[in-house]
Image (cartoon, rainbow, N blue to C red):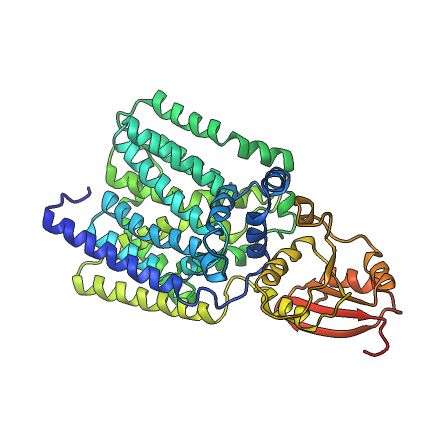
Amino acid sequence: MPETKSPRWQRLDSIIALTATVAAGFLRFHALDRKSFWLDEGVSVAIARLDWYNFARLMWRREANMSLYYLLLRAWQHLGGSEFFLRSLSALFSVATVPLLYWLGLKLFNRRVAAVASLLLAANAYSVRYAQEARSYSLYVFLGTLSWIFFFSYMADFSAQNRRAYICFSTLAVYAHFYFAFFIVAQWLAARLHSRNQPPSNVAATFRWIAAFTFPAFLFAATTGVGPLRWLPRPGARDVYLYYEHMAGNAGLPLLLASGALIALALWPVARSLVARSSDFRTWRYQSLLLWALCPIILVLALSLARPLFVARYMIACQPAFLLLVAAGIDRLPRNWLRFSAAILLLALSLGGTRAYYDQDFDLERDDYRAATNYVLNHSRPGDVLMFDLAQARMPYEYYRSIYRGSNTAPLVVYPAYAASLSYRDFMGKPANGFLKAAVDQHERVWVILKTSEGSGAQDSSEQQSSDTTGATSPITEQAHFPGVIVRLYSRDLRE
């Protein structure tokens, strides 16, 4: 059971939680603007800058997932527009999750487990990685952790206050990311395993309220299908392995094996009762954490047999449970020096993974739209036009164009360009066959920014499409390669 705390230990709790939170803040704000916005981050910023009409149309037509984050970023970007500031919203939510995990560790275990789990989260490269991205993932983890905290509180005390908080944070977590629906399934299963004297009708009604409040999200998913996820390949064993390697802390097999061994050690005393209903809180907390850590992944992998749905970063909200189980395993070690040594080893490996992340992304081939945009703007001339092989690729370009400090005139965007300013239609589609050839025939100089598959060894389909539609008579007079992006200039100017 959780510890009974004296005022002295309460002060110690505050010191430990504060130390982990400060460390998390340093690691998440360090080098926050070192890397370029990639495609998805550029889309986030462009959505936040739309007028309300186009914002609402785009939410319903395509981007309702993460809608809560877009609303928050919409307000946040009025306070500052730099890469550092825009990403800092995510960093703040990630830092705030660290004391939440400490709080949850105290509720479920003890001070030692809470301290180790919060420090492991603070140093974890996967958490740092998505704290430094202008997307919803850290908000999703923050709200998801709050949902689980109040789920445990509600299961312990069926008060109206706990019930309202659980419904509120669960609903908000779904609007931060639709995949939190899989976590609500895990909570429902955990509630079913909880066989103490709870009022079943009240618990069932709680889940019905969550379903009612999140119905618009499910209506959107049913209406639009999985169109935004059609690019996904079917997941394999390697994809799952890499997900766990990254979630453990981006330090390769040694950290993953150590984490797995510690989780097994934590579960060993209750292994025989993990699949049965139990009135024992000590067993049920492990059942719940396992459901939190595994159920969403199992559900997504099962559904992926029919339609690929597995994206590793969409499962990042499993991480708090994973780290709590690792910390509980450390707590099972028989000697203090063993516990201390294990915690220090895992922290050292985690910090090594975070240091490696600052130099290079480990789960993404980042598109360097910062460099590509600056190249086009530095070399453009009056009368130049610009098009993109993928509509959404315009969005990071528009951000970097808006903060460009040079004196050159930006090329006129001819695709995607449905209105004088960005509209919801500019976020969807690809140019029709022959569009680029027509643009080259009509204009002296046409810039093209191509999204590529970096390191694939094969020509990207969009690049192939651009090559096919220009025709052999359209000369490429300039070409520059950047990570994930190719910039080309097609020109009929003989002076080139």
